Amino acid sequence: MKSAFDKIAAGLEDAIAFAEGDETRGRIATVDVRAVRAVTRKTQDAFARAYRIPLGTLRDWEQGRRRPDSGSVTLLKMIEAEPETVERILAGVA
Amino acid sequence: MKSAFDKIAAGLEDAIAFAEGDETRGRIATVDVRAVRAVTRKTQDAFARAYRIPLGTLRDWEQGRRRPDSGSVTLLKMIEAEPETVERILAGVA
DNA sequence: TCGCTGATACGGCATTGCCGTATGAGTTCT
DNA sequence: AGAACTCATACGGCAATGCCGTATCAGCGA
Image (cartoon, rainbow over all chains, first blue to last red; front, side, top):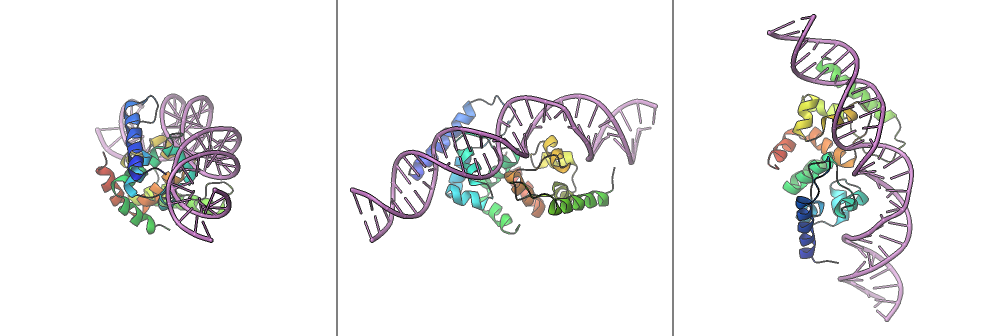
């Protein structure tokens, strides 16, 4: 298991890769999912359950195998900005 | 153009259709997108821009041609519950 | 009648969602 | 040391969606 620091470092590297990289595709908006999760200090499993994302899908995103679509990107950015608020709203949404 | 009432009625019908209908597929969670939009009283175009969803994709959802994935479903439920809060957060997220 | 707006309807391809399974490192037991 | 558990990487694979575009239509104001 990596240290928390290494996790965040990995996240930053991914962010840089995205920033420098392609951009060659239709999808403009993007997010570093691992960096978002780092903000919440949750495990993949906890994060997935908290924000109602299938665990396997979350892993695809973090491992760079797939990119989240616009709706998920928006959700992830909201989580990054105000994780508690997002959780509060979801708690009252069945 | 339909009246606001008709729009909501259409939304309810869709919701019923979903509730009665299939359920035969993997995706469990679902939302009546038109009903969510009715809460916000926005046009498709305004809704799409406000919540960063491609207009064409939003239309696919409302017309029942496609179903939003889990991330988008979560976002939509948040919008339905607290549209202003969602807009406030997004306003500060570049 | 023309033009604008809000919306339906759908073709179509690249890409993703989401499922499953196998593997590996770190931790805590007994 | 070895077993058992947790957190995560890695990837096969198909159905389904994301997202683009274009054509058509109803209602409304100029």
